[in-house]
Image (cartoon, rainbow, N blue to C red):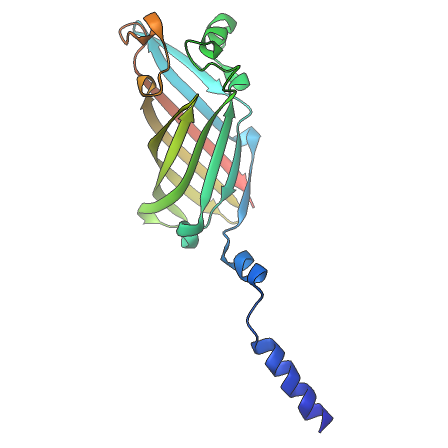
Length: 196
């Protein structure tokens, strides 16, 4: 009789709903850790027809992502302007100055996204679209980022090529606003490797 009563209690306990905290944990996509040595953001611009290349170093990313939980997935990338490097210190100082990024007042660029969709291919090796927000200085604008993602076990590889108009973010004031001197379009090459 006691054994039957114990089994009844055990069955009742296992049938109870999970606590709210446990349900939240189940519904959250996994966290991914950025692998800085295998990741980069490279920019390409043109000054009077001559190409300028540089990179944004020491950026970080908070990544919660799963292909089968796109509605719950999110990414926030923080790019410190102290890591802006075009291999020419005088130019870097100008870009960090008040006519451009105004880095002393706004020390980082951020990109955040909570709206993901699979555009083509398979979930583990496909082309996605991230509809997010890019914030430069005190200007925030919607920014769509198409990217390719390959998942390999516990490792994710993301690559993207995109562009933005610097004038949309008031980058380059005064004489610098003339797009015949510095082209308005800035190209970006992005590669991110992350691990669970």
